[in-house]
Image 1 (cartoon, rainbow, N blue to C red):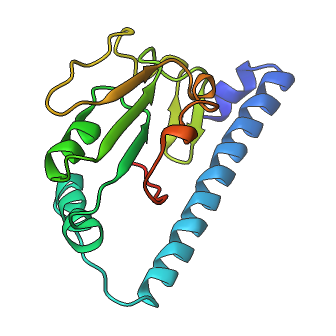
Image 2 (cartoon, one colour):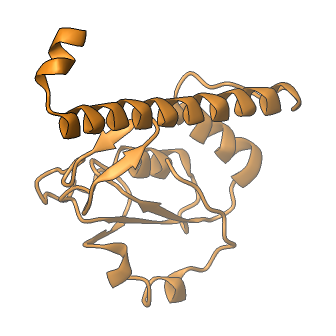
Length: 163
């Protein structure tokens, strides 16, 4: 390794060292955050685990929402799996479902502790998924385009979530 490093110019060695330390620092911060999360979780009462997100949705519907009508808003629809699943779980005919997405992927690089998604990730080529069951309002474009019009159409109490 020392022989390889000697082949690099000093500025390149410094950049390499900086990148290695920075990545280590990010990893260690994420690891520390994970440890804090687990310490907090151990102090909480037991909570239910679900095999998949659809089981979680069914549990929320049966225990919290019941037969109450809802206005379901989803930001980042992609293929529409969550939106369409909620529409089959919810039995109230007055419930409404809104989905917001550009369907062209994320507009900028998205960095998180687990990695980085480049601009355009999650794209479905601009294709809006076909409406598979109940009526839905799929809003194509950035959500900022709809911010002024959608709140006036919301009728049920606010409950927020992310799939």
